[in-house]
Image 1 (cartoon, helix red, strand yellow):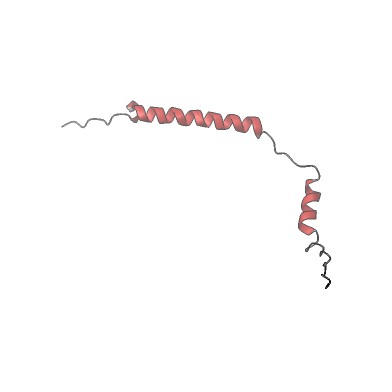
Image 2 (cartoon, rainbow, N blue to C red; image 1 turned 60 degrees about the vertical axis):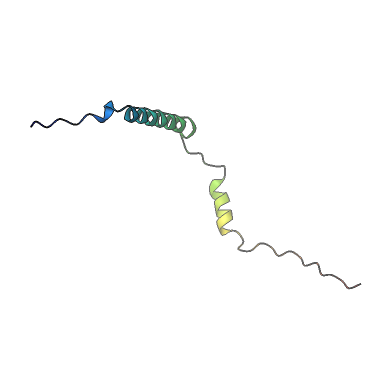
Length: 71
């Protein structure tokens, strides 16, 4: 008895539709990446701001205590 070759998965409409949708999504994502994320943006004085944040004062300046006076 000869063995029949299994049908190609591309003959199933659902497989074709999913493949087309995935290709469209991939194209959209690559377009978005090319338009908005072409090069990294470095903020002005970025390293200085980071060092101020990391190496700045450990605790904020204490606020003066406003003591209540008895009436």
